[in-house]
Length: 325
Ligand code: ACO
Image (cartoon, rainbow, N blue to C red; front, side):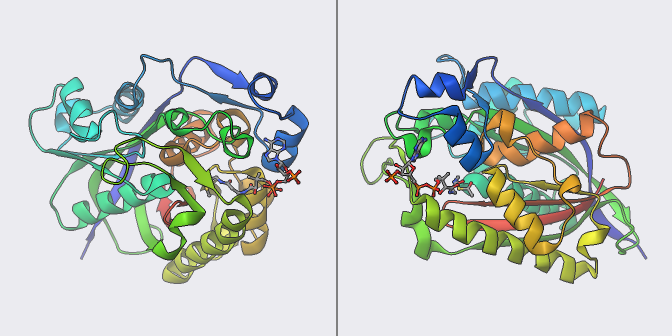
């Protein structure tokens, strides 16, 4: 007997043309390239043009993923877009993407889990496939996070960037073993007691404004390593695999020190970690699919490889997805 499996059959990404280096940042706030590189590993980030919106980034990443998967866009029957920076408070940015791709069937919705958004969206996609409610799902993480930054706060504005990444998830069948292609296990968590540690101080209901990112960096750092390592251990326990079995660790790109700390805590060889934070900064929900696309397109990720994806963000939210490419 076979079981439904969610196969990731293609990926794509998009970065805005404008890059902002750490030296550029030092002309905006009191900071230095040395400080930013030492504390975060970030060297540059991409920032969207004034007339470039989250939906624009999302559509470009989606088109690249559709081309890479070799499908017709009309085969897509569900769009899930993870973002913290929708074009508008409503309607969902996913519906703008749906219209721009020329789709009139199926459903499209946004989900909000900040930096964990893509891991949440992929888990939702897997659930739809397993329930046989959708066959071909476009999952996107897209952000214009620069719009939420307080450009006078050096503690936060140096950390983030804009971008988008997307994957096509297709219903398939598997034997129900760890050798199957596709998503093997997903683990999501949140703990709302920590909302104040990382949040935006505005919103439609409370202030009628968009607000700016506020963060207690040290506390976020401490929780990030512990929570992420926990979600990874769950994925390994659920499948009976060990850290040695992982071919590529594709984490949320928040900060090099968080990634190094997590890899060390779970015993993952540093050469298996995909790093893009140096060139992208933290692109929130876009960071995991952006990193995945880089590692697929440069040939590191090959058919049959075991990939471990994870993320942690505001809420706190966090989670992991283990999949065979
Ligand atoms: N340039 C220069 N100095 C700075 C900067 C900057 N950009 N930002 C802060 N400082 C200063 C502070 O003002 C402080 O100065 P003081 O000692 O004179 O008061 C000093 O550096 C130390 O500040 P801390 O905030 O304690 O610095 P820390 O070593 O904790 O590093 C950082 C800050 C990089 C934000 C760190 O806490 C961190 O990485 N936290 C994780 C947060 C993160 O990655 N968040 C992303 C979103 S959440 C997620 O995606 C998981």
